Image (cartoon, rainbow, N blue to C red):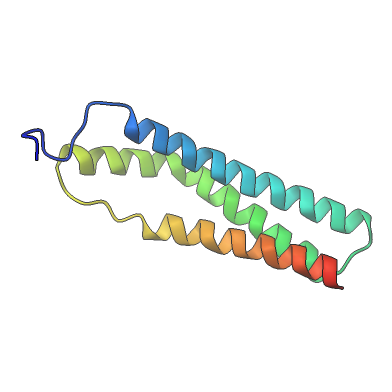
Length: 108
């Protein structure tokens, strides 16, 4: 292992932040778009609700990315592990809601 510890002066954490931003933006956009399509086609209200939850969770994650980035930077500089389970879980539930919305729309 190098004597630098866990900190690498490269742009890895910045690229990771951008990946979180892209993922959260895609989820929020897909959720809004899905809800709009279902509502225009007079689809099931449950599908609109699922897509709405997906959009909301994507937006929440997007709003949290700045704070998350600062916490990651602090953890790296202090050479301590960073717990990011809450953010990952939020996105996981958002994707699950989007998939459920799609299934409800197609099946019903």
